[in-house]
Amino acid sequence: MKYKLLTIITAGIILFTSCQSNSKAESSVSTDSTEQTKENEHTGDPVDVSKIKVADAKTILARKQVPILCYHQVRNWKPTDGKVGKDYIVEIQNFKDQMKMLADSGYHTILPDQLYAYLNTGAALPSKPIMLTFDDTDMDQFTIVRPTLDKLGFKAVYFIMTVSIGRKGKFVDYMTKEQIKQLSDEGNIIGSHTYDHKNFKKYAGKDWEEQLDKPTKKLEEITGKKITEFAYPFGLWNAEGIPELKKRGFRMAYQLSTKRDEKDPLFTIRRIIASGYWSPKTLSNSIKNSF
Image (cartoon, rainbow, N blue to C red):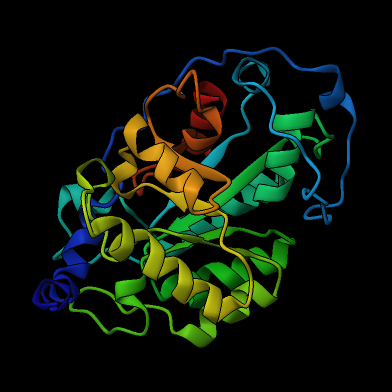
């Protein structure tokens, strides 16, 4: 149990190295499906996924990828922030400008149920769909991100690292259980980001219980909902671990930078990190070039 206490101390440091894999673009492997031309402008419409049959990998890979952005901290830079750290810290006004750019450009946020239905059945999506995701449980995701998105009618996915819930760290404070539940109650999706951000590729023995089972149970107790989405720490994954995710009821898992797995594309869904150095225009170009 001692290692758990040590991870709390380093939680702030972890933030700067979270999801460090370079967000290199994977060439789009698909063309627009006929189903995609149907537009549904109602962001976040309920989708019944209970009867959806998982499509074969070839079908899923043939569908045009939906842009998915990954954010960490949203706050103004400090003199103590290093060059690498700033890559994962989007300053407040820049974040608001980025979100306004998305809205002005006609993007509509979607949630995992919509993505799941689209990838498996070709179900209609809004015009210019995009998914916003936020990692590591940072408090500014509640105090700054939430009201910013609410004004634009946007919803998002929050991947929670459970070791940090309710903690006050040296570099950053973290969301409480009550705040996480509120995000869920307001129509956002809560996903798992493990207990303390241990590299998924190194899991063995009790790691599956400590990093997957216990965090999932805790998040389900907080939200009162089944947890079906998982984000790999550092964006790193291996094929050997995917059966463990399936066994535990996860439906989709999100990585960074690498190509999707040819056998399990639903468990290697791509995201790109929205860099703190990017202007709204740069972000717009990166979305177009990466997906």
